[in-house]
Length: 633
Image (cartoon, rainbow, N blue to C red; front, side, top):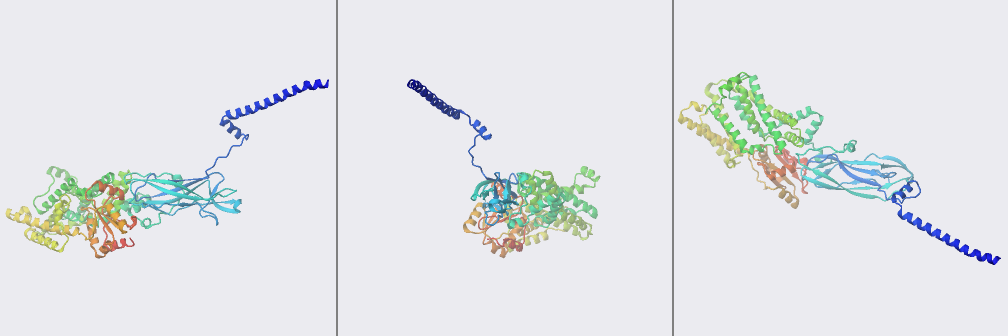
């Protein structure tokens, strides 16, 4: 019975074991199939419910990137830059300055030949209690902004500049501090010409930054452009006052000399009028100068031309010189310039033909005054060129021209005194003849820009001046200056004409020779070559931008001829660049160095870096020029 029972039970037990093994195999296979076939998103959801633990991904503890305060920059401009640091949650970095024994966060500024950087300003730190460091520690966390100023040199080329920065920091949390790490990143600056507009950007980042300017002489020396910007920021009243005073100062520079005999002849050789009428005529004359000056200035700033190059355009100068010659001949008594009677009768109802003539001569004088580019005018022209506010630019230029014309208002007002003096002895004819010769000489002086052969008669030498003086004396002796052409017999008129021509030629040679002095320095006529020679020979470089129509440029030649100045400049590589007429090279240099008028003199040290604090935009005497050269090596 028992044996039979055991025999019956054994096959059953084996069957149960087989079924159990099958079930285990089935479960294992099912689990494998489910694991392989289940989408990753399902496992992620299970992890969110804490059913599975995800593998931790590496976290970037600190990120850094650079930003600018402007969308683009121009050569010579100053702007702000910032490094923005962002931290992962629960992480921080040691501040700058850091607690003793800790490594501070620090930015390494790149070295670039076209950029100057100011002092790096680190943000104010938050002081946290860090258990692992056993006390309070100044740190940066969440977000930190490091700022500094940057200035592009005037020599910076147009295009994109890429600057490599480095940021070193040590990241910590409440439990540990990692090893110091350095991040490398680039910041791009788009350098554009003066005709491009600049827009502020990233205002929220720079709103709370107070950054000192670049620590170099160029930033501490306030330029005329900087003064104008400061005046403009204080309000339009101060900006207009700035340009008005700048115009007054310009009126005492050599570029206005040709206008003095014209002004005196227009108002001093006419009929006797009252002081008030002389004043009103002078104001009308200056308004003509101002209107022409303003229109030319806005046109020049809008087109990017150099203010004054109009003097080298025959289409402009030939008519202007013709008007001056006609006025001079009228003073000599060859004929009388009169407004047509129909127009004169109409003008008499509103004050007379004199006002129309004064305004017309003022417009001509405005063209002659075009080369008068003082530093204040350069600042205004730069402003007009870099903004789209031609309306404001027009009124600023008009104000500048009125300031420059204040001297002519005084001259014109009191020139009428000459006409009020007794006319006995025909001495008034002598004055009229002198004025006539002077005006024709001015016309001849400007014609030399249209006809270069006329320049061959201009030499700065004692012998040449003796010849010029002899021509003037002979001309005066033959010219019958006490009489007018129309009052003389035909043969005497011929004698007077020869005398006037000799006097004009002598005066042209004398005045022109005096204003075109040439130093015996060795000059290079190519900018790139001059800078290359300076770097190769380890010498500083002077770039002199000039034009034959620029009176102040010619005056600087006298400064260069001074023995002490010449001795100093002999250690320089001297480069003279001709801007008399426009060309592709002139356009390139104008854009590169931000030139809106002449003269402009730039200096570079022996390493080829431009010294922006030594930019010269006016005539200076040798003593001041020597001061400018001090410390350049």
